[in-house]
Image (tube, rainbow, N blue to C red; front, side, top):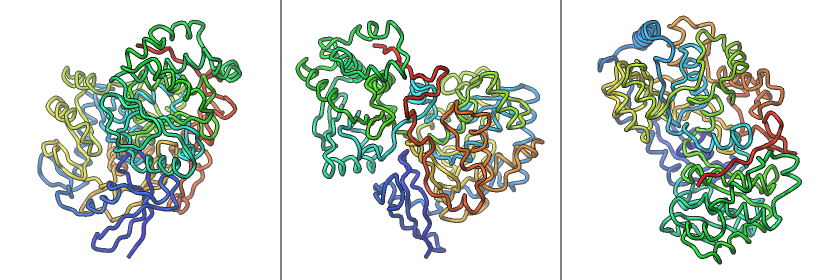
Length: 545
């Protein structure tokens, strides 16, 4: 029997597991008591990883046009077709789809190939179209989630938006409930529509669909009017437009909010008074909260100074297993790499670091806009990496529109008619790193050897890049090579302008990478009220009705 410490990867919580295995692909999974994300807790989805050890339905060999081929032929074919498309149709004619379940090293090399050598930022991933990421960038100056999971135990009050979090992040909710029973944490749940009462709470408010943003912006105004905003913190560390408070007041008086939420003004005021009195507040939310609610949450924490200290922070949850890792390397349409945009300075720095041949010049298309680009012939090829049930309808449309489709998959389900199929690892066969929602970087260790001729996704991308003539820039032999390069890029010409700076791991050795224990980058983000903006101040964002 062998014990492997790895990660669950079934949601965005980043839970650690202990996998007990033998040579016959027997697998028993239990929570890793040493991992900070879950401390030994594990939900049914984590225990269900055992079922993924079976090889039924696995894609075990490369396929071209439905016929089995060797890897050398598959790589040469992909490289030849992509080179021809690039030469004939130019930069931006090739697109990428990535699932939320890749390791960070996969995301890094795929992003580098697309943006640095194919000249394209057209990257689609349902997990990557994040309103939370955009809101954090506007408010803080960088896509940084400021909370840590330990803030739950240090908070006085936890505000949870939507009881659906109990289904999507059950281990985290178990941690909340333990803090209630053992530490006296007060849990308040806001539910839009019919409340399911799936979570034991000290206070539950059921409000009208789409009204959470109105309710929380009204709370912000209440704090302002009763003198409970942190004037010192605002004056020193937050830029507030002169018309912010007047503009925010429109439609957010207590009577308007009560009508919008379907509650009485008395109930609204009681909620406001309790929330305003909580010094250490953590707000737990996901993308499902909606953009208005996300903006209101960040405004509330900034204006009341409940940020950058223990037990006081907005806590945004990612739906995808490694959505944070994908965003860190920039494997999304709107960023270049390593939390850098497409400004001239950023393009010069990243292009120099990569030795780029054809650097993307601007953000790319995603979602419906990318489908439209396929429809009118601007996109001639799509490489889809990783199974993605949520993106299945999008992928079906893309398949009918794009002339050349490459699919890297562990299972061929739904991709049988791809022009090229490349066999990928399942989650329990992946080897690399993953970043949890609170910036905790952990090692995903391969539990079983790769079956058949399956190869890591980073390996396939690397081999295609080499076959296209860029071997000097794609010389990776193991995941540690990619991790080191990703780390160095975050530190390159970064004199404190960006919090994402992993330089402490720049010299990490292969054995140290193999034994990597969980660590969190960013320490306490925005400690001392310092934000990665031009003037060092955060921003309050005007709400919209």
